[in-house]
Image (cartoon, rainbow, N blue to C red):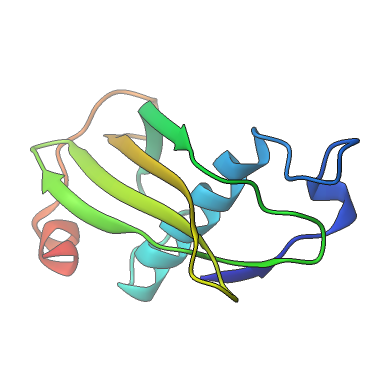
Length: 122
């Protein structure tokens, strides 16, 4: 996923506010799931239960970034993602993240991934 950095994404210094990177990571994971036919509004929710982020270099107002999402592990009810954010113009690595999601039923109880979802992710 590519995205342009707008003024509302930045802090007073003109660099992306650190928490906004979490939104960019979320958008890329959502795109990843949708591209595989998994609706974020389906019978299940996918909630973040763990997120490790390392900030390496800032993005600034007007920059374009590229956000990746790759599954590293799938368990009965969890999906583990490795994600990176790059500066789209020069390829510089800006952020790395390891994110763990859990599949939840509509009543917010952990639920095993269905065979259909598992198949779409592998």
